[in-house]
Length: 309
Ligand SMILES: [Fe+2]
Image 1 (cartoon, rainbow, N blue to C red):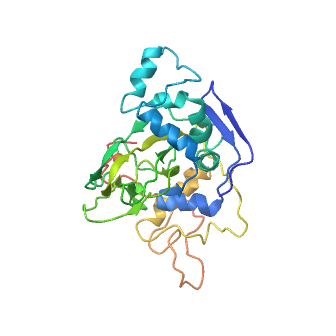
Image 2: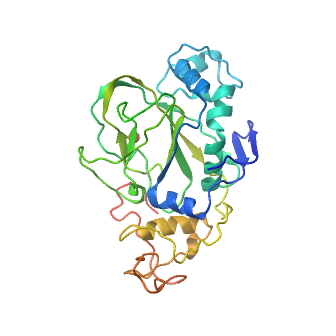
Image 3: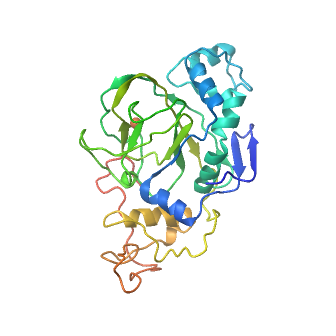
């Protein structure tokens, strides 16, 4: 993925804008899988600074102060498990929050004027550790809307031995459970790896066998404009024949993709082997594409996420 050509940052509105960098297939892939990984995109010097900052070895040099905060607040927040004061550091804003590779992805998925994170969670783990149980994070919601997207930042080399976050692809569309001994996809990578995923995805801290400290910062970028299809148009991409997933899943990925295209209201399906389901062995496209009557996917069957609409 190429970085975006232009990036503007507005500290007053705490938002940024740039050119989208994902194309149709890549946006659809995010709808289908619920995550993507940018290995080693943050420069080493910044990764080191981040570790030093989190360990209290680098003095705070805030470039701005949130309304109502005192100097004591900055130190209190910095030392907490939610060290959001790192968002006040110029070097962090420029190289991590506005990392060019990340910014292009967020702009593609969240539209113009992306809202920057306001809360950081620091997951510091003294390795080795057994794996965490698989879980959907607190307050997850299942639905076609993509109002926010979560990021994991690993400021040190995080190979499998150091227990990177493990995600279960495609589990952001509904309630899932997995046994402890079932594996997923590890967000392993060199220092400066950013994991981008749907907040509802089933995940856990992976098992670690090495010795040492694993830092991980986690926070959320926010949509501030209604969805419109303004990512990179891909020649040859056909939404009628694109791959949305298998049985029980394709309808959800397609609904999310339609919502992102600004056409969530028009989305209807006929069920069975009709669109958006398809097989490579078909002699023609699936029936049911473009229907304006039919079914909506039932996102919250037994309403396990606790939201109603
Ligand atoms: Fe979690």
